Image (spheres, rainbow, N blue to C red):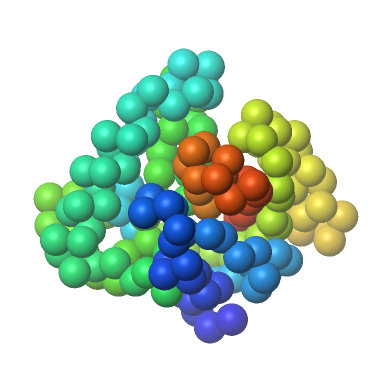
Length: 169
């Protein structure tokens, strides 16, 4: 893939009016390279890794991105990282600066893996992804997850796909 490019995301196959149906083809075992790729950074509160205010934070952030004309729905991703049992950071890919929002720019190489199952498996997926990267002779760094659908939409579609992104060196 080209620098700063993400796999295609079909935002228009949306039967729920909330989250589109995620198609994992093209997302698994990808090698991505970011060079100052722009993201809007948002923070949510958690209670032992369970999000408390994700809905309101995501709604506010999506609105700011849309109002700024910075959304690229064909290459959509929100990378999430638990920084503690009480806090998570979320990085919304954008095409340009979003006024009034905390901007972050990611650089580096990332390996992806697609997982399917309940959110409670994220800890297992974290360790599995780190192990797979090490088997390839690379050093895993930051691990992010792209939670492709909310719990209600995952139930509706009958699948809960989560994409792991491992920063590698």
